[in-house]
Amino acid sequence: DFFWTPNTLYTVNGALDLGSKSIDDIASVPTSGYDNQDDYQHPEVGHAYAIKTRDSKYGIIQISLIDDVFNRLWFFWRYQPDGSTSFK
Image 1 (cartoon, rainbow, N blue to C red):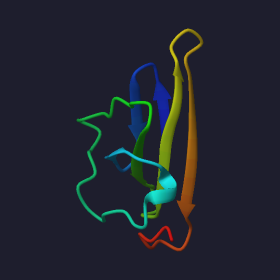
Image 2 (cartoon, helix red, strand yellow):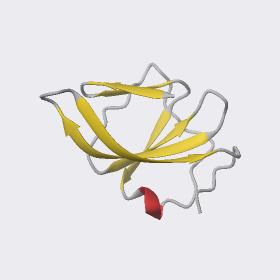
Image 3 (cartoon, rainbow, N blue to C red):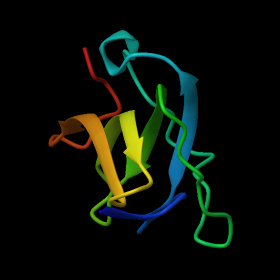
């Protein structure tokens, strides 16, 4: 439920910048505070982002590399299919 164009991360229901941290250190994500589409995220390498999906479930991505030459974004991800905000 997200896509990336150079320097911008777009999401369906919003994203929340969790700061510079590993997704392995994130035990849970908030249920509110997600930016809407009027305020797009500008991804930063090393930052983790909580993403609220179109079916109100949650995922986390951690940006590992942004390649501006070939317009590619590398990331680690986790998804919580049961709809809870817990990632442990």
